[in-house]
Length: 346
Image: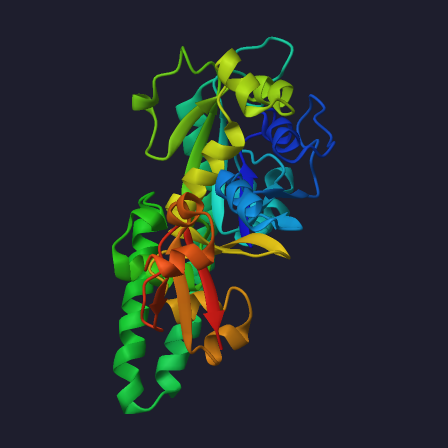
């Protein structure tokens, strides 16, 4: 299951967004640290393909892919040194796969800002600095452990471990200069991810403001604008109602961006019992994809029947797809594509 942490400074709209996404009633009171323990909510990944396949197969139920959202309490300047219960909050961030940072761009006199003024870029720098300072502390503590390991290793292993030490020293130096781990070179990023550095995680930025008045050119890649209060008000609307009122689907934007950043896709299974989406890494082989269902589907994999979902819906049944040669038999090295409908033989 994909886990996305919602972070940001206090009073930027995190808990309101969480409520809109999960339809779970949480405390959105207008004061810093309204959220102390993280709120956790599991939501279905919007996927219209499932409805079409379920109708074709007359499935008893639909099981979408899911994403877990974790609403983490507001970070403030000094969080890396424990300000605002910062260490506790930073630990919650360590446990997520990707970070969704909510940035306040709206002006509202009755909603206080912990820094006194609304300044999106300043707020983003504060959050990144606090995460980087925590990472710096983590790396500084980690280097002596690797050095000790190098001293006790045999001669063949020492060279490799010494290379690791040099990489961690380089990571430390860059963090000291304010470079986050996700902006470092590939070797450094891999080592940083290996010890779960916060700034090694993929970031996306939700600018909480008026989409018509916010210029995304001022913000990093993977940024989008959403009026979170409007999103909460529209959270029970149908797709047609949203389209009529020209209201974006915030959940869809967040999940699509998250999947893209994490390199994830979904393959599908369908039958009378259920139609289901399964989340895997892009580039997975058919054998590796089987593990999403059960480890036996990987270890005992023989072959898979595969058809793209649109082709199946167009012809109307697996039997007809087989007659038309659209249902292919693929081996363990087949690279699964997003939207493949698969049936495994083990």
